[in-house]
Structures are given as C-alpha cells and as structure tokens.
Length: 285
Ligand code: AMP
Image (cartoon, rainbow, N blue to C red; front, side, top):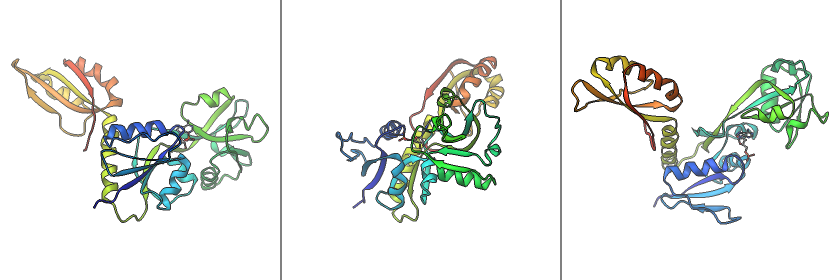
C-alpha cells in the first residue's frame, strides 16, 4: 500500500492563498478545511494537508512531523532549519533590505557599522553582517519594524520588502539587499521514502514552469523563417509546419512570459502574422 504524503501549508498570511492556488492548479484537488480545522486531504492524490503558520513549517519538516511543506526561504534561514529545498515556487518573492530614515547619510550596508538595527530577522541579519565584517547592534522586534527608527528604538531597520511602498510610507530609504526570498517546497533531509515526494515536486514543478512560459504561434513566409527563429528566446527547437498557402509556414514555440512584450514588435517587424500567445497549463521539460 502507498504511504500517504503529509504536506504542511501556511494557514494564514501572504503565502496561504498562492500556496492553495498552486495545489489547485496542480490537479491534486485539495479539500477545503472547515473553519478552525487544521487538517484536510486531497481528493486526487494520497496527500494529507496540515495547516500551520508559515514560520512553523520549517521546524515541522525538519522534525519529521510532516514530509514536505511550503514556506518562505527567509523563514528557513531565520529558523536555521536543516531541510532540503525541493522547488522554488515563483511566488512570495521579496528581499530582506536594510533601510535608514531619509535624512540619514548612510549610502550602503557597510555604513551600518556601529549602528543599532531593528529587525524581525535577527539571525539572518547578524550572520550576513558578520560575513561582511560589519559589527552592529541587532535588536529583535516582533512586528511594525518600519516604525522603530521613528520611535528611537533603532538607527536602521532590516525588513522584507516587495514593492518598497511600506518603506516610503514610513520615511525610510533602502541602502541595500541582504537576502532574496521566495516561497519554496521543502522536504526533510535524509528522508528515506522519496517516491511520493518526488512525484509532488515534479507535479508542482510542471505548474510553476508552465506559469513562467507562453505558447507562441505565428505565421511567416518561408524565406524569413531563419530570421524569425533566430529571434525566439526558446531553449528547444520550434515546431515549423507548412500551411495550405504555398510558401508560408506556422511556427510554434514555448517562450518565457517575461520576454513576450519585447518579442512581439520584433516578430511583427520580421513579417510574422496571426501572432497568438497562449497560457500553458503544465510543462515537464
Ligand atoms: P506571513 O507573515 O504569514 O504573511 O508570511 C510572511 C512570509 O511571506 C515572509 O516570510 C516571506 O517569505 C513572504 N513575503 C513575501 N513578500 C513579503 C513582504 N513584502 N513582506 C513580508 N513578507 C513577505
């Protein structure tokens, strides 16, 4: 009998919704837990779900309470948990940045020497500053890190930033990035039963890969085919098919979603017509 895989998901906060959406998109059909219920399961796969705080996930995985979990890369480092990162999930992207009040004359992280720094990530902050030979006084604060300088609690802060609007609202200015984070799928190090875990990693990876790409279709005259295919930022070979109209071919290719905006005008200038881009549901390289 197959053993059921246990997966810890963030029960609230920023990572909850996108983690749930990813599971839904993967097709395992997670069952919505009832109110205040901490466990549920998936209808299409032998996976049991446990809902816990994102910052508790690394310890649950490390200690073998669950097989896998979804959490932020920053939380693994901050908790100093010995777990394996199985997959980067492409959401929850943010960076741990050092910031000072607008009027402060610091220009870079090195200027934090001798300063008092408030952060809810004291371990990562202390270890990165130590690696860079910067001796500073790191103070742990639980929340509302951004108001610490105004309260006279610290000269600078180190906090997670995604858009930078919270820093601006609080009269702060970034002076550098210490760490880049995103949501990740993690597993216990040294785990012996890897079959179900590898399947989950592959299936979630097929969705995250697909999200980062678009399926491109266009028609072009055969005499400009080489010019057009040279423009495509694809890794594999594009599919080229003859059309009913003599001398014209259809080109199909998978291209990174981030390149579409710059690619379209170039394709048009190369004589491409009937250009379509479609979302991709799954992609297993
Ligand atoms: P939570 O406290 O449950 O909302 O989750 C916080 C986690 O979400 C962090 O540890 C990061 O991994 C991630 N995250 C993504 N963007 C941000 C952001 N702008 N501020 C704080 N956390 C973020």
